[in-house]
Amino acid sequence: MHDTGQAIRRLMLGIGLGLALTRGAVAQPTGCLVGVARLDITPDYPIRLSGYGARRTESTGVEQRIWAKALAIGDTADDVAVLLAVESCVVPASVTEKVAEHVERQAGVSRERFVLCCTHTHTAPCLSGALATIFGEPVPPEHQARIDRYTAWLIERLQQVSMAALANRRPARLDWAQGKAGFAMNRRLARPDGSIQMAPNPKGPVDHAVPVLRVTDAQGGLIALAANYACHCTTLGSNDMKICGDWAGYAQEFVERNHPGVLCLVTVGCGADANPEPRLKLEYAKQHGQAVADEIDRLLAGKLSPVSGPPACRFERIELPFEKIPDRQEWEKRARLQTPVGYHARLQLARLDRGESLPTELPYPVQTWAFGRELAMVFLGGEVVVDYSLRLKKQFDPDRLWVTAYANDVPCYIPSRRVLKEGGYEAADSMIYYDRPTRLGGEVEELIAAAVDRLMPKAFASQPSE
Image (cartoon, rainbow, N blue to C red):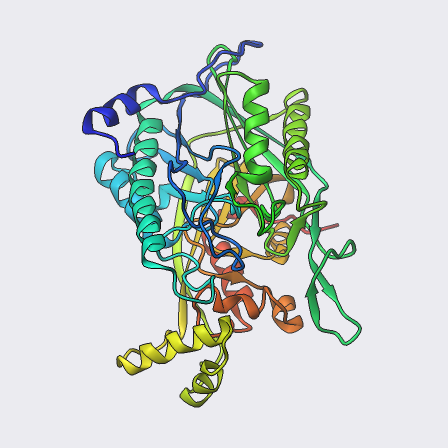
């Protein structure tokens, strides 16, 4: 599955699938170069699938092939920005930084001008160092060997597709519009006793926005489309053992089928507390993908707003504090349990026995891309709950804002102040599967919002109401 050096050169010259085959009204390029590329990242061997801890065996086949897709926007090494979308459940910082370092070393693209986003599909391969304790038990060595093999190969593919997009740049025009899709439903339902269960909550908060970026060439031909939606890629459940992109994968497949030669990439917004409904059938994954594809086509048939490129990019890594770390006595108590909680506790005790200290803070990436005064993109790491998107759309102009989560790193769930107060899976229970020592502290929402405010150009501030 590994490519030779000559293959890399061919990729950089010829992989940009999405060059104009569709012709429309002539559009004058803005002087910004744009390149696109995609590479298949489907393994040809069985591998553990990520996302659900109940799985104990490897994949049984391929329902749908999965892809890495890159979009490069800019004329020179000083201004070009690369957006990489990966059909994976969780891409850790260790993978992202290896790709970013390669692109900077080979093409001069600085760190703030590179972003990697994953779709969070729960039917994609596990990666080394991601969701390390999700199965609540050690992974068999032969399974881990295939996970490590795939991770190393994936890093190479991500480096290649990023460089290919840079090599494929040509004069282009950027436009955008924003629509809606309604299948995301809040999944935090309060029981009579006030505790939170994971179940559909039609009255809970969601973000149904579908922002779409269109890339056309100098003749008006469609080159690429990028879209975003805030919803878990969990239409398929833990019993589904074949590789698949879920609704995000089908949205891309259907758009590319409707527009031959065009590249479509999908990223995911602040949908950590939203599930697609209905779910648990393949037909529903296709149904939801079709809903996004149809909304993209509806927007394309209307008027889109021009966007100035390349973007002005900023990046900051902040520290999010954990709550008080349990003491050794508490770890020993938990370690007696023959459950995922017990397995997690035994790992923490092993660290303490080696003389290691447990972390008190979590490194967290925050990034912004501003396209002139027309569009601002915010990229947040982790599984971010919807409160962040809704807050940012009050803090900044919602008609010029695009919020993406699962970006640059997925270290754990990122709960809001409200979710932390309510408790439940997104606030606390999920942390053991990410091998974190405890919950995040109550101030994390304010820290993240403040970081976005520091990075965001003031031109995007929300206008006070009359």
